[in-house]
Length: 434
Image 1 (tube, rainbow, N blue to C red):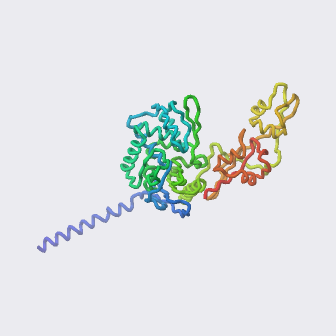
Image 2: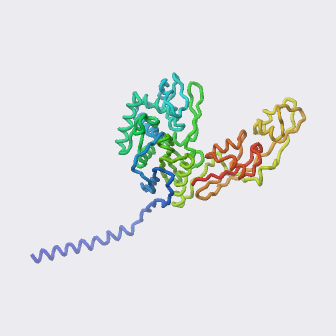
């Protein structure tokens, strides 16, 4: 008995003696760098519910009422898009499958892209219309084609939501339009919508559609231009997808995602009173996240908005060249030759009509020299120097950039009259994002 106890003690001591070097080896091995989640402080009084999610660490960084269900309006169309792409992958349909527009699709109501009864469009074009411009007619037509009826397709949407683990979600239609009884409005929670967003990220072709700030489709030879209601896509390089929504009950909603240097973040906001506040809120929390990670804030678009050195003032005429009118010259031809608009050419030369005569000298103002450099901006605002293109007006520029007011553009750039704006000028734009 004593021998057995002694032997057992000896074995245990030997085991402990051999275990220590293994632990020591683990500690000395090359460590795996642990990713940390951004630490942000968010003023969320403007939103009914929402969340901020870091995909790299699988962490919800911030949330408000994330498990509570609310009306979601056109965020509904994300599920329509997911089911359509899954049907394509399953071989049930293809991107080129042609669908004929039915009369009932043209009478859905709400925002529609203008489908006409009897015309035919491909699945690819209908998905663009539904996900970029949020066309209710396109979403309804897809639902009816894929489900037989919109009601049957809504059942499919609910089944898929359950399969994904979306416990607080319920769909009654494919558009997000208000139901006859508001209790039956399509509703979901931020946590459920996060599940849906993560599923969409598995389909690059779907993300490629939702990241388009604008596009166009063809309907019987007629071009329908599509513009995304998610204006962050046209402002920031890093924001690359998902969907907006609005009804009176849902208010303004947005599920957005950004990818900066491989670090993907998802932001969701439900029930915001104003779309501009919604956009600023989402841009702000995305920017805060990247700043907290030491990556800088969201990068402004550079493809069409290169930084230009601002002139001291836009109130003066600036440098110009002279075009001497030849015998067969027209104002339109001269404007086209020099890359300016007819209105600008007339404004520069104080012309009332379109008549010109040979030998007449017209002033053509030169373009500003470009400086290809990044523009630094503080968190909470973005500064962009925009080069005025032929045909641009202050109002058109204001619409491009989150509807910053024309008055603000004029004050910031010391422009006395809107008509003073010339092709080649540089307009400084300050976008507040929170």
